[in-house]
Length: 227
Image (cartoon, rainbow, N blue to C red; front, top):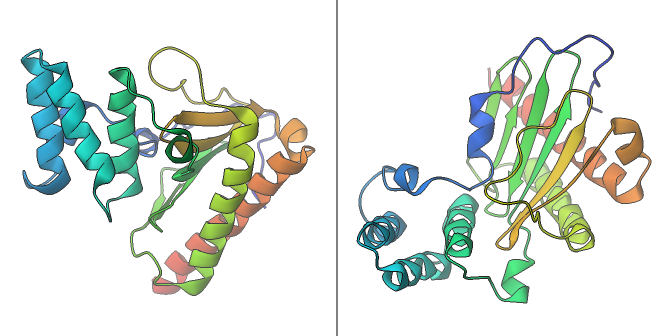
């Protein structure tokens, strides 16, 4: 189980790496990711179209990203993030698919953040800034099992919450003493937030927290065994 914060104020700000977990990358960042081919070429085309005022061409380029097989989950989330900004909403079956789960939980000295994605990758940032990046989907059966369980729980919870309706990007990190349970879908981020006591007493909240703790344990044990 996560080691929860006590009454000591946080001494470590959230890691900047957290900002990369949600898939809502800026167009500028997307266009600098690797070779100018494949899905990156479509992001570049979309940015160029927007810069020239051709919104429809940008929409068409972004839709091509959503239709490409085998991409990283965050790339699909990024394409839908920008499509939504252009007024295009995914159809319900697509929009309701949970492509990632991000759990943000305050510890005694900082924020722990765990992410699991439908592509089989995962990330964990400890409040100290230490991180585990799991980018070898399927390479470990136990990690895969726990990751899929967390995503399955997230898929059950997301429709009960509904997408974030705030303007612009998702909210800032939760304040000290709060935890946030995020489900990432093409229709936007769905999240529940509250104290540990409140969310852990809710059946769905407890299921997400427990599944997240299980995956975090597997990731950290894998990292330790590799040293």
